[in-house]
Image (cartoon, rainbow over all chains, first blue to last red; front, side):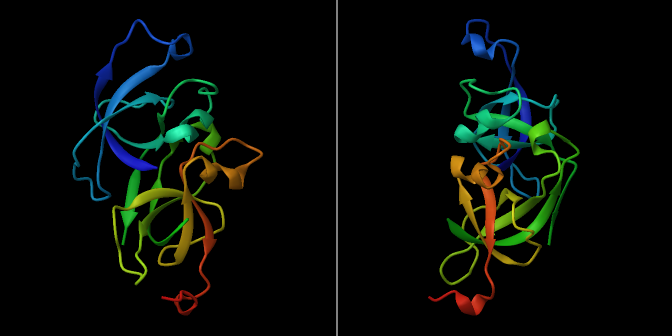
Length: 88
Length: 90
């Protein structure tokens, strides 16, 4: 899993019916010290995360294992809101 | 699978229900000389590893297999602890 910061939202009306009701957010992977990297990912939110929060993003087919995403066509899901990262 | 060093912990109170009770650790992949290479990642622990230990981890869908009976959304899981660094033959 990677640590990411929420940059914004995506609105999509015409989408796969299994994605109806799912919140789509733009996230940017960040380093463990909190500094930004480049690039972005569109991820489905499963925890109610908000703008600029640090979150845990799971990628690949494992994203479908999150509760509420069974058989949903996603490859990136936000599965946690990070309180602290403690690195020695 | 790859070797990695556990370098830290992550606390997340609000998380997906299927991650309830799982321990989150920061792992730094190491090369064959056990020196850091690549970016650290967040892994779920399935074996009781701690900070500073040398472990091996697997990525991808297989990372959820240690928790097979319950579907756990993870693409990075620690699946073993290396007994000692002398056991890594270079």
